Every structure is written in structure tokens, then in C-alpha cells.
Image (cartoon, rainbow over all chains, first blue to last red; front, side, top):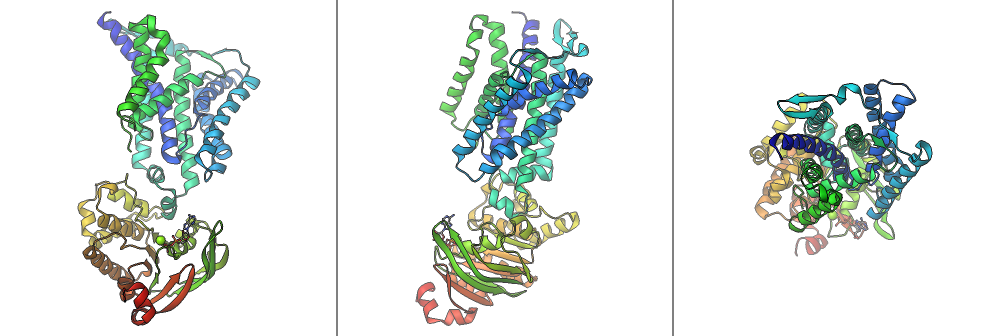
Length: 292
Length: 234
Ligand SMILES: Nc1ncnc2c1ncn2[C@@H]1O[C@H](COP(=O)(O)OP(=O)(O)O)[C@@H](O)[C@H]1O
Ligand SMILES: [Mg+2]
């Protein structure tokens, strides 16, 4: 294994790490604010790919417009899911909204199967992004670099939202205490809506980069990325954005490096990921950055 | 300023308030005393719209606010310092204060009020960038009061501010409450520490198992034989 090859894998691992990290942030934000594991999040991820697909095939949008359109539509989808499936259960026992989330996941998967069809569809690959760059001896696909750059931009924006705006302040207050937040005049419903919009948009962004890398889309494509990202969120400590990103990186790296260095074991990728989960939880039950 | 008429609140089968009536005049300090479980917290929560009134009516400056949403009520310049302080432990002192000012848009006013609460509680200023959760109990109570003041309330309601604090801190706290009152705020103070509360209050009500059993000026209640026996240790 040469250095150049290693660096190529490293770049891929980083890009995939961002993809998982952004999805994991969606889980962690929603959990942080409403204490709900949004099991439909992986399916929201899947829906984003179909929004892109139909933006291009049905409405003949240029690909970039279709990407933007999909991010907006996915945010709307996330908001609607909250209104329909979670909001009515906000004061019910935790298990009720959990069941509702699982139901919503099945509903989206089956809706997609019926309406979009169960067969795999090809995700549009823009020519410009398919270029390969040669940096010295290292060959990196342009899409890898774009993934990294856009993800960093999304993270910086998220950081700004959460730590520098009033809405972010409301989210952080809400994550600890609904009633007291209400007493301060925070609009709880609006803040939760906003949280779902942000989490779903991030899922859409990472879904697009995922599909550019693995260009087959189908109704169950969100299941495993969803589980891995959820695992990433737990490894990092649910509720922590930094943690979700770290967990995403660990899982992205394991996925890529296993295939690169131990191709015989590549089939056990998820076993390695879940083993890591077990180890982290054994030594730090709250995850790497989680608070007790 | 505030008038509560025949207020009833139930939690399922539990009748927490069985029809209580009281008044808080503008510019006064009124206290509601009573032992654990008497319904004091429930009264405040009902005024803030955090629990629903089963019957009865609540008026603020003549306008009915019964069962309005908390958001609507706090936007009418009513605020509460909840029992157990409930500061946001994950936010800094400054952020806690900014959450208190959440509905305000007047940036300059917010800045001025922040200076003002730092004058009232200089210790908070020293800890401005510290997380709320790292403060001592007394400091957290000060932060909770300061946070409530940041909303620029006309009516400030305090739920057992002295709970769990050392006597010397309690004394300091009541001094500041007096100071806040002198700056023109109307105060509804809930306490188990009847002595301190009645001393500072213009008028007091005694709550027992969801009913008001006695009322009078602070001095009258301090001299009342029943109050002395039940709440002041004879
Ligand atoms: N969320 C609740 N669910 C059921 N019962 C409650 C709840 N909150 C308070 N109670 C009951 O209502 C009564 C009054 O409680 P509370 O208003 O908290 O009293 P206080 O503040 O005077 O100690 C008590 O009997 C208490 O057990
Ligand atoms: Mg109480």
C-alpha cells in the first residue's frame, strides 16, 4: 500500500464521514430537542434522492436546481412528519412516539415502493462532478472534494444557527426544559418545526452526496445509511453535534479503510461498526461527547 | 393588577385547588404561604397557563387571561421564577439572561437591563461566561430571578425562592426582592419560609390543601395565633 493510495482512501473516508456525520446530526438535533429517535430519518434521506430524481425526470430541472429543490422539499417532508406523527403524541409516554416513528419509517418505505416502484433507478451524475483531479500522484474525484467543501459549509452554517441566533438559543433552551422555555416566551412549536427542517435538510444534502457516490436509488436505500448514522450519533453521544460528526467520521473511515486494507473482511463492515458501538458504550455509556 | 376568582385546578382525580380567590394590587408585594402540597405552585402555573383551570377566572389588568397560552400570558409582562430555579444548565449565565429577554426586540433596553441585573447581583457578572449548571444553589436562584427580570415584567411571581438556601443567602435574597419591589415591580411571592415572606409582604394569604384559610396584611398574619403555631414554630 503506497502513500498515495492511502491518501486517496483517506479523502474518501473523510467524504463518507461527512455524509454519515450530517445524517447523524439530524438524529442528534431532533433527539436533543424533543427526546425522540426519529426512526424515519433514514427514509427521509431516501425520499430526498427521489425528489432529485423526479426534479430532473419529471420537471426537467437542471441538476443543480433539482438538488436545491430536493433540499427544500425534504425539509417540508420532515416538518410534516413531525406535525402528523409526533406532535400529537408530545405529551404521551415516550414509547408511543417511538412506535409512531417506526410506523412512519415503514409508511415512507412502502409509499415509495408503491409510488416510485421497487426497482433501482439510476441517480443522475452531473458530468462536471465526475472529473478526476490529479494532485501530485493522488487521484481524487471532484465529487469527493465537493462533498467535503459543501459539508464543511453546512457545518459552519449549522454552528452559526445553533450558537449565534435566537432560534438556536431557543433550541438549546428547549433541549433542557420545555415548560421553562415556554415561560420565557419561546414558541415551542415553531422551534421544533425549525429543528426538523434543519435536520431534514442536512439529511437531504448528505443523501445527494451519497447518491452521487453510489448512484442507485430505491425505496429501502435509506435503511442502512440510517442505521449507521444513528450508530454514529450514539457513539458520539446523542444530543451532541460534535459527537455526531465524530461518530460519522469513525464510521466513514471504518467503512472505507476496511474495504481498502482488509477486503476479505469488507462483508463484515457493519459487524465492525456495531462492535465499535458496543465498546464505546461499555466504557462511556453516554457516548464520546454525551452528557449524563 | 392580578385578580384570581374561584380558581379550581385538578390533576386527574386530585383536586389541587378547590376554588381560591385573591388579589394582587399594582405596586404591592403579596405573599401566598402554605406547607408542602397546599397548591402554591399549582396556583402560579395556572396563572401562567402551564396548567389548565377547571373552573374560575383569572384577570390581568381587567383582561381575562384564563387558559390562554403561556406565550400570550408572558407577552403581557407577567413572569415567573419557577420552583427549583430551573435555570438552563447547558447555557452560560449570559445566554440564560438572553433567553429571559426572548420576546424583546429592543437591543438597547436589553443591554441596559442586563447592566441593571448585574448591579442587583454582582456575582453573576463575574460568572457571565460560566455555564448555568456550574453555579452554586444561591447563584442559580439569583440567575433565575435575573433571567425573569430580563423580560421586563410588570408582575414578577416567585415560587419558593428561599428553598434549600443557607439562611445568610436567604437574607441577601430577600433584600434584593425588596429592592426590585422598590424599583416599581409588583411581586407575588410564594414561600414556605413564612416569617421572611410575611415580613416583606404588604398582604398575605394562607393556603391549606387547595383552599385559602386566612388572609390579612403581613403584620396581621405575623401576629396571628394560628399562623404562629402552624408556620412560625409557635
Ligand atoms: N403534575 C401533577 N400531577 C398530579 N398531582 C400533582 C401534580 N402536581 C402537583 N400535584 C398535587 O397537587 C397538590 C398541590 O401541589 P403543589 O401545587 O405543587 O403544592 P405546593 O407548591 O404548595 O407544594 C399536591 O397534592 C400535589 O401532590
Ligand atoms: Mg410548590
